[in-house]
Image (cartoon, rainbow, N blue to C red; front, side, top):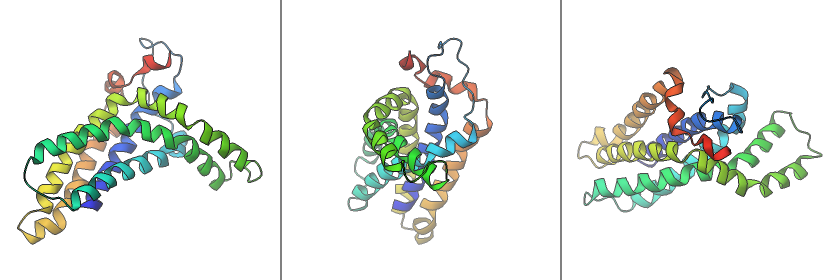
Length: 206
């Protein structure tokens, strides 16, 4: 169950940043003239590790807490509460990781020199509160939607993990996490991207 939930949480986090990042790059553009475009691959990959870390951290934390307390009592209510916490925290935690993740990726890909890395890393660390606030505000609606999806998927994963059928309990959580991830990723990656504009708090950058 833990691995399945972590995988699903990481995918939701990456997709959330995929929607939010263009609004951050379109800073100071009037909301009504702003056209939400898909982010360029390289800038997105540079910071996507931050969303992977935030998704794994938050989903892993909840999975760890639940692993010792699997019970059918108040299951829906419990997952609704977890989804709310995950969704509210996700964009802020992602923003917290973005500056440092960007510097590390630049170093590993040869875009930054080792001589100035520690200085740049220090500036990145100092900038984490601002990035957390900016991305948190921009992505709060996207994060809450991701929390809703995590709650629904987490409930299904838990039901399968606690099933009396050994095959369902062994393979169901992972299979469901993969299928749910693909179902969420498809409209984000291949659907009309403009439909996500209303979810992005572009006005926060004015």
